[in-house]
Image 1 (cartoon, one colour):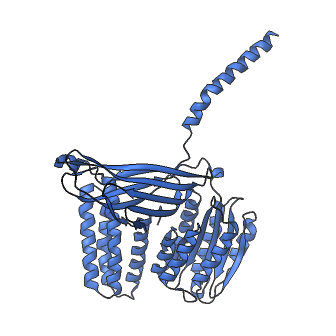
Image 2 (tube, rainbow, N blue to C red):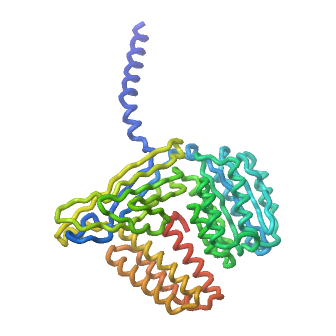
Image 3 (tube, rainbow, N blue to C red):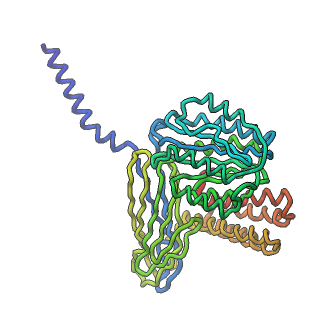
Length: 452
């Protein structure tokens, strides 16, 4: 009997300890919520005069508890099998696609679409239960014909729709090495398709292989749906590209991210750097299709602030973010407010500069300059193109010194290195390679892409 009493007493003590420690265990668990970080390029501005300011709206994804807890993936592989893909290209493409299957789990869905001048669904969209049959189907791909890129993406999207859900990561991964020459084929037409699919909750990653594809088209298609774009100069790079892409796919934590900024007190929104936004009066709206674990994506808004007296504080903007949490399967909202101060002290103004925000703004401005470089080069105006490149290199070098940024310094060096390629003939491999690299780097900066 005494032994029973001791046992009961011991169990009561254990229960009490568990009860006391449970809240501590719960509080130490990582929060499964997106973090909103609001920053200013300069928290204090000179008194008695208006000026431009930068507001950075940063969104940081949370850590997924485990591989088993990640959101399910709904992916369509759309592979070019036109005649230009023969040899090493199609061999490496098939090997990379098969390797990527190791990232999938049984609750993921996969389809494989191939296209030349026709489109064929090689593997219809279905839960990923039979890896061996998918591998056999991929290994059976042969090459022939022209390039019906628009039809291939459209068919991939129709396969995604079979399992399209807001709590899944819905993505088309497009690989092409050539010009779209069957069906709609302009950047505007493919951009329209990307916008349409992005509005349905799908993102499109475009992988351009070699020097024969249209990088403007591929970038428009990816950008309109908030997907990735990668330039693979040679087929051997495809394994790394697919590994990075599927690694990122398995780290998505939030989808359908809507950012709304209400500027206040006479603050006027001017433009967003690097991202498409809608500005109506004092309201700014932007949309991201997805956010990744432990990665920050941001929106940089340039605003015009009115003049203020020394010591005065001004509410610049209210920020509201809504998103679909793909791990908890809840629709969630975040709120924040941004204030700025005025000072007659030059030292206080200078010391309030946020170098991290200004580095982001500087590289976005540098990326915008590439649009003008490519426009001038395409028109045959070499002198203007090289002048803009030199201006970009000088600007980034100056900003790198000002904010002690190695990243900006490296981008300045790259701008200098691009000058020789810009002076090469438009049909040369040197310019073809550089043009694709510039577009891919520019896209990576603007979209804060986690890999290249």
